[in-house]
Length: 218
Image (cartoon, rainbow, N blue to C red; front, side, top):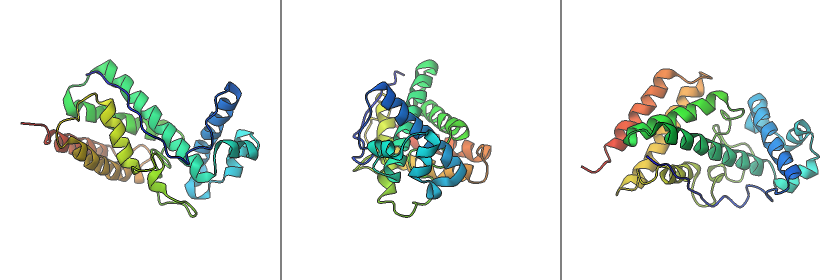
């Protein structure tokens, strides 16, 4: 199966401006890296832009050149996480050429789990906030897109990546439902186990394979 990338319109508040020059880009990425590291230490609720700037050794004014505030900073991190996840998944799809929906599901879950285990901050902010919205947040359900909620935005990107696999009638809605199920079960898997409960991860795969395969045309 040939994977292809797919884009979406990012939310207007994700960043004030995206850097182009190398030095600015390095600062931008350093801010996101330190934001991710701090999330593992203090969580999204206690995170402050001041502490992120200090850890990144960047003036607070520079942070506000890129981000309008904490919500904007976390939205940019969620967007970067999704881009990196889709890139990792696309490379595995090209390398392993899985068969059908079941093969796609297994790789999609495996790459998500791998990022949960290894990527700094990913257990606090993956493609959205994992826990309850921090005080003062305008809207934590639309960090990735102004119109689509986070899970719907991820479903849209996965559908584009799948290269026609999910284009049959009924699949857009089915994929949307599958995203909600995966989100709930995988959150449960990592709630009390930093590596993810293997039994729950396996059940997430089985649930998604059965549900999505059932929507294939006869």
